[in-house]
Image (cartoon, rainbow, N blue to C red):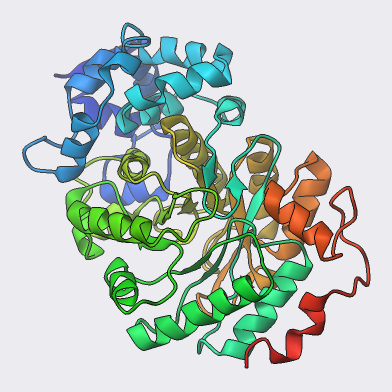
Length: 459
């Protein structure tokens, strides 16, 4: 079905829904690379006007990738909640934007199971940045393992203590630095330099020993491939969260060595360990705009819509954490600070609206046209939007992955400026060990058993 929009003497024709959504997307380098972007600002505006008039029911009825050829499409449609969709099914995309801007948090939670990723991607394309922030702020997605993440007025931090050689003392030093600055309530998560089960097991035991020894109300994760984590669980190693990078098409997931049955197997295995004390949300997923394109698995669909489809995959497994590594893939997909900022707000909005506990790795690679001031802007906007969690990297410079992210100090800034607190159980623990005062502020020069034990923590 073709779509048409008249602008003065010219008529813009969009061959199908995929083309319309791609042309309506705010311009970014990845869509240009894929050959699906609008050719001009006029065509982009015409596509947005045209998309605003499309009924949500039409989007549901016209899968962008055929049901028969893609398991993500099958997952989206087979798990769709028709009763939840009925509340909004009569609306157009433009009407849905107006609905979202006035909806209550309770309403947004009620309709979430009825939303497909294509619907949330479509409405995001006609929204301003302030719209994305306003609606996402009202979305409540709360998850639990050893603490409670996503409560209103909170901001969690993944403590990311990566080391280029997986050196135990270097990792321990970074963890202590992060804990001393009040970070680590989302997860203490290591990107390993090696993927051998032995190396992964050493890191898992290091993290588990630290958490158990000091009764830290948080969870650990070594961000290795899901098959390696399954092997670690089979050996009885202490696995809290199962990590995997995921994407929005079957072919893109295959490029990661992942299938939906494999994710289901890992989810069931992790739940059976019963390591959570407050809940059983035990999956951790990472995504990023451009991953399907880089795998030649995009099916002619714009990268932001495919990113939203990855959130539909995540939603099925009730994850504790999901984050978009928004600027990590590089300027071929998000060229500069403006594109990264917009993408970060889109991803957060789409993930939270669909019911996923979305965090953002506010980041960029060193060859992108972006700098730390751009990241400060995105960080602050995400804080206002109610972002679930961000990254805490020593000095904001990851020495293993070689990219720029956010530091432990950045979370202190954001919490102070916006009045945000940590996960409540983690906040209480910091106060109990003497690192923070009753208001949650760090105590300068605090002496605690945690810090005094630093020399032998990696032994």
